[in-house]
Image 1 (cartoon, rainbow, N blue to C red):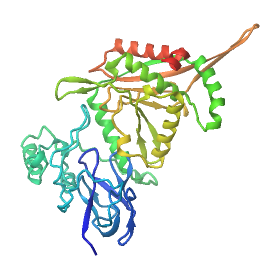
Image 2 (image 1 turned 135 degrees about the horizontal axis):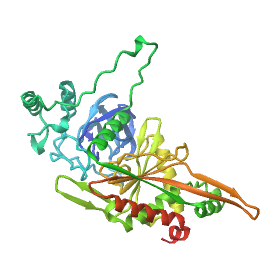
Image 3 (image 1 turned 90 degrees about the vertical axis):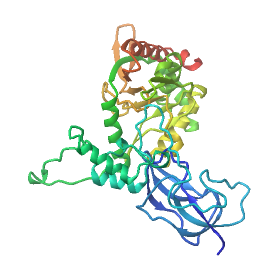
Image 4 (image 1 turned 60 degrees about the vertical axis):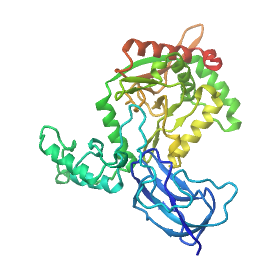
Length: 413
């Protein structure tokens, strides 16, 4: 057997541990460049990690159920002759073997402004903190690159014990024993569901939410959509109302840049974004995912429809890539296909607003002269009151309403 090279996990969004769900290769198997080696579960999705080299699998370093972090070795390959399209891994060194300790990237990846922070620590430290009931994000690291060490966690515990007014972590109250009243069953949450619950709670507690409600008369838009639907049916496209809203939202963000921003509490400023990326909340069997549609302002309605359908399908199949999950200007969440007149969506940090869509309201009337039909789309805009005031929110919604009500502003804008 020739020289073995460790293949290490790279290109994660941060240094939080990921779970190994499935190993897709076996010892002795020949793999090609970009062939999936393993399925990993991150905070947001299941992703397949591709091989940066061609070769023969010589050794597996992990098994399903293990946890890994940025820089950890997944397996060892006996390399074959490098292919023309072989791509070096960003954390690999060409000559020096990489150890299991992710020391090649000593500096933690900074979180986006306003994002929920993730501690820079090894999987073992995450487990140790959980055993002690400590929120690792509250621990000040003293290791290289401010990495959290065991002694940092222990010092945090000692300090908190001396200040009983501040709890180690917000431990939830235990539930009563419902089994004494009848049959019960426990349904474990997926990792994505658990993290979504934690992130939503944190967002609700840390952001002063206000929700503004509006209705847009989309009668003309619906007529135009019906016309286009027939034209694009042969292409397999579905032009649902959210497609038009996503396109209109990019125009509204350009007019009101404060909504295309993030609140940077650490530096006391607001980060204004010059791009127009729209997050799309997708309800999946394993939890809520928010893939991001890039550069909506540069895309046609048909292109938006194709990409939304693709992102939604891959979200449900758990095939989204990590780079498709972040950096949104604003998120759109729609319950129109289910029902309801209005709701209060929770902001997806580090964004400062989220737009909710409810079921279309149809009003019909008749007179001796003619029958009439009007379509109204309910809009629910939740916004961060630290960045946006009520008057700004009202103006934003009126502008978005005007775009949706004038089909030519939407098509030509």
